[in-house]
Amino acid sequence: MSYRKARRSQSKLAYTMLKEHILAGALEANSRLTGIFLTDKLGISKNPIRDALHRLNSEGLVSINTRKGASVRSPSVGELIDLWGVREALEAHVVRTVELTPILLEELRKSMERSLEVTDASRVQESVHFHVALANATRNPRLCAVLDNVRNQLWLLQRNAPDLCDSNGRDHRSIVEALIAGDRDTAQYEMRNHIQDMKWRLMGLGAPTT
View 1 (cartoon, rainbow, N blue to C red):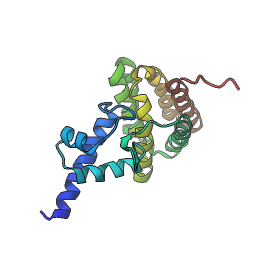
View 2: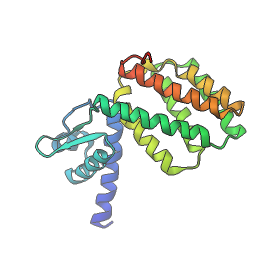
View 3: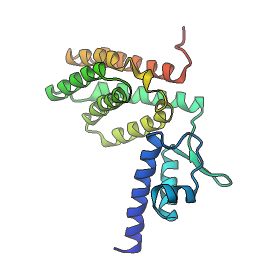
């Protein structure tokens, strides 16, 4: 294997491992990500780690400061509100354009039922499965990639509050029932409410009264 191919392979491995550590909460927000620390933790040399950090920086999961180095992102309130707005618009678009098949509707129904039965981390995983299944069914890989990135950035907040996802199953039921009925307008309305509800609860702001 050539040096360039070997470095690309190591960079991809470093990116995957570092991203998994961040999303799993193994690296806290604002944690300093020094080359020595990551080399020891991941067992990968500095150059691939540097490549991985720059890629994660472009995805909004890592911040790179020329003087202080890299750290796990801690999004501002304004950034989070913007991200929730993007997610709401994209998820509503998914519901409006997704190809509704009996197989998809059954998968969504079963996911919704499972989310009502499980707790904590399992409920979060089921919620992700529900939304990813919907997005994938649009057969729009670019849309899926953008949504995945937005969810990952929001997860920097949500990963520490899995108990705030309690309403997911109930919200998902309303969405599924509307889709089964072929009522996309109601499905979009329920999806927007679902995303907004998560935003207010996870950010601890309280829903607006107007």
